[in-house]
Image (cartoon, rainbow, N blue to C red):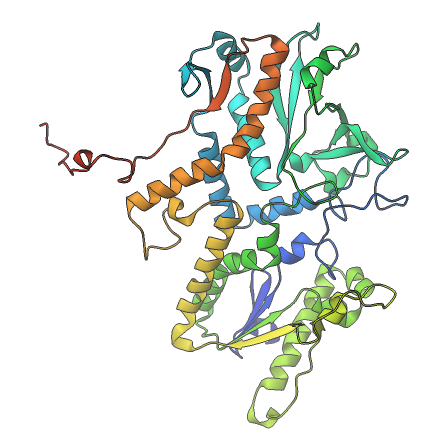
Length: 466
């Protein structure tokens, strides 16, 4: 009977009998490899086992980008928004142009560049992958391929960030001139036989001149492009903050909740949110980590059963619910018990948050929260919800506003495009192409009422010329 009363809604549980929805952090938990804290993806370079002697670990367990990828795959909003962003940045691809004067650049058909594109059949996919990684992970790894005599770059390819780790020189305690590739770091990351080592471009200035001086240049060379950031090695993913703040969980949960409510004909009166740190705080970090998924599920079910037993019925009126509350004192405490800074004693993070919901407003409450979450997720990947057409069928804006939003997006994405164009500037100089040739992305621009003359704003019927 107990199992029939508890219905799983994704990673959460609906208690049908008590009309209570128990929410457990899902995406936020996935972001962290340990239950007690959010993963830190900037590893400290110390003389201990926290870092490999060959490569810099990407997160506590070296699977940070893989966890981000799983979060994206499980979220409909992110999975739909990211391809839109990548396609918008890519536009119609890269074209060549020359300066006619100090103010005017004119597109030209430069044959060596066209030949290069035709020889690289997957170049659109590779550029798209580089854009994707720059957008999500804030760095990417293009790879140059040289001719047999090393005098020409004959092609480029891309290494996925989820497969790539930066090489690390354990002796000198610094990054090395190599990257390591593994297509399944989670399963085979500690097996040196499953890793591929690729030489990395060690030069940051006068790249072409220095490469031409190399007598033993490899046939292929990785080139790392990275957004400026304040982390130690790897930048945080673009959606990291959205996951930490819970927007991903809210976005993912809406459809699950509605489906569960319809399927079980239940009206949720109470929503109980249980923080991911609550369980290791209650049972101990090491004890909780040692539990199997089945054991953790059993513990959660018992907690819910105990809660239902306590709050159900008039005979239980007056009973007290005792839950953990984390304050700034806990958050600022070091392992040896000292407290850093000046913690705010009034700032609390409760392990349990219990909210009652007005029955007639239940559907609108879920939808409203989910719409806000979608906007936050759009923002996390730089997509204006106006450009996407809006998050719901309500409060839609006109075409002019969408056009303006799109044009603003084009301008703001230019830095990312310039990072991709770096690659072709290197190829051009290395191959000895015409140095008057510039590279740029071919982008469509939407005409808006603000950019059209009044005489052009007249609405004409589609059959005016019939």
